[in-house]
Each structure stands twice: as structure tokens, then as C-alpha cells.
Length: 376
Image (cartoon, rainbow, N blue to C red; front, side, top):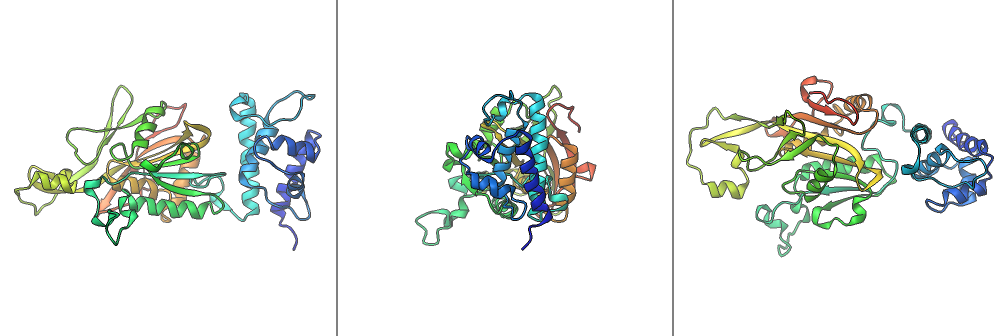
């Protein structure tokens, strides 16, 4: 079976890169092995114009690093670290890496707006979703290990969001390792891969750590005395602007005698005001993507809300087929650097979160990217 033109294009590009620096396949193999071992046979198979093999996505990053770096012509070929690249080298690296990934995606049959657009498509792993845990006094009886019908999933908060996202990332990255962890299961190695952090500061200690170490992120989540079951978003700027959920009193709700202890146990204090039942009609979601502060070669993505509907809305903005492609295109065009923060309105109808459509200005409450003025 003849090789596809797309696969041949990638093989030809890799061969041309090597020959442009007058390297043998053995020399290139030794240099790239400074990352992880690669054989001369593998280099040959990736460059074959008759029967090319696709290199792993993570190997293309090494290619881009190697051929983007400036070095003396008489020096021994070696693989640079990204943090050691000059500004000009960094620009060449990013452009070359994007080109190589695009060629590989084309060879794999990944076409159209999906190339380079989805933030849920990763070039390498591992990918770890870190989840909040329901407090012990708020869990279902089925979350207790002594229960014959013990179901571990009942320990997870934001479970709707986790199920939505985990399946989507697995489908988008079939070759990569995708795991999810409760916060007390996280080990240091988890923090140095691609991180996706669900939920806020109350139940997810990893969110607290990231909020402390991501100095550039201008949005903070803070507890306020008038909300018991969620935390609002506040800007780190002189205005200190706050973003809060919206509630609506039930028309048929009369003043009732309510038991504060029962409301606390059910975690529903915020659903009552002045003895009247009220409904959540709009949550606020934070979707942010930045470099992982523990490994700048990987990313951290924050999916958060004042309440759980906001967390789900942050995820469904880029998983819901009704709006996903438009939202991916908006983010790719609006934030070409790949780092950004978005606060979004998440309408709640009949108890369910509506996926935000970023083409509608009213859904975009606040936008920020490093090095530019924020917009509201």
C-alpha cells in the first residue's frame, strides 16, 4: 500500500531538516537521545519516502528544539532545553513545532478546525485531571467502604464535569495516558505533566496551591461571608471587580421556618434567602490555560465555577458539539499565545448548565492574556 502524500510530506521535512545541518542519521539519533533514546533505525523509518512511519508526537517537540537552536557550526550536536533558547530561537521553535505537528495531524487524518485549535488535544502526556472530593459528612452512604455496594465515584465532587471531560480528552488523545486523581492521591509526578484542575478552593487544595503560585493570573477565587456553598471570583487590580452568581426567588415560595443545621448538612444555605427558597439562574465559570508552574514544557488548565454548574459550563464550552468548534476557533484567534483566562456566564435552566457560546459577547465577562490589556 502506497504511503499517503501527507506522510511523505512529513518524512521529507524531517529529512530536509537533518540534511540542512549536514548531519548523518547516527549523529541526529545521538543528539535526540539526550531526551529519550532513539535508534538510527527509527530515524530512518521516519524519513523513508516509500514507507514512512509517523514519529511519536513528543518526538516532534525534540526535533523542533534541536533544529531551532542557534549553535556554532563546529560544535557537537546536542539537544537544547527550551528555557535556554534565545528569543529568536524560541520563535523558530514554536513555528517549527506547529508545522511538524500539523504535518503529523494531516498524515493521521486530523483535518479542518481541529488542527492546533482544541485545548484538549495534547502533543505529549501524561495528562492528569485533579478532582475535588466531597467532604465526608456530605457523601452518599454508598461512598463508605464498609457498604457492600461501595461505589468509589461517590467520593468525587463535580462528577458531571469529570465524566464529560475525561471521556473527551481520552477520545482526543488516544495514544496518551489520561488519569484522574482525587486531591489526596496526587503525587509530585502528577504535577509535572499536563494538569487539568476541576473545582475551586473549598474542596480542591491543588486549586489553592495554583492560585498562590500562578502570579500572573489576574483572577482569584475568594470566600465571602454572604455565600456558604461557593466562592466568588475577584480581579487582582485596583477595581477589585467581583463576579457573582445570580439567584431568583421562587414566585410561589412563602416564608418558611427552616432548620439551619439541616441546610448546612445538605449544603444548601445559599439556596435560601430571608426564609424564601430561590433558584440559581446564572453561575460564573473560569476557564484558564497557562504554563505549568512546575514544568514549563507542560500546561495547566483550570476549570472552575462559583458552584458546580460553573465548573461544568467551563468544560462544556469546549466539549459540547453545539458550540465547541466556534468556541475553539474564538480562543485560537483571540489568544494565539495559548495562555489565557476567561470568565464566562453560565445560564442555568431547569437546574442544568447551558454551554456558553463565546461568539455572544454577553457570555464573556472578562478576558485576559499575558502581555495585553484585559477586556470586560
